[in-house]
Image 1 (cartoon, rainbow, N blue to C red):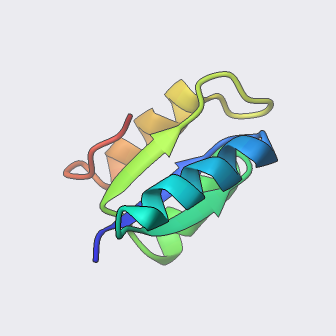
Image 2: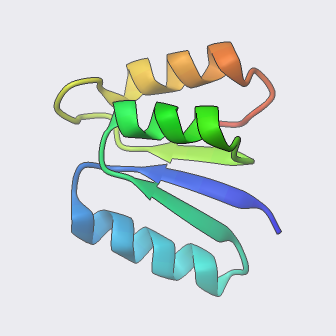
Image 3: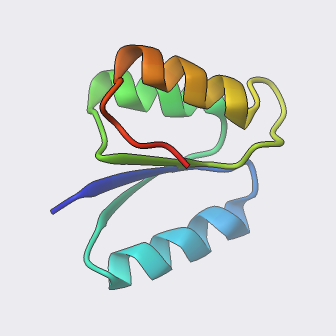
Length: 77
């Protein structure tokens, strides 16, 4: 089963994404900010990273860049 990490500062968005993706058969992990998402990737890599762009702290673009540095083969959106 493919693992998708969803990073978004809005809880409602995270929960809807999880519901939709789990219904399609994916394992979904949720992070409420970029730092948490990067820590989660350090602990257990994902097959795909989906991130919001505008977030407090580390924005989505920086989150994607840092994730690609450590996991260059992982797609990010």
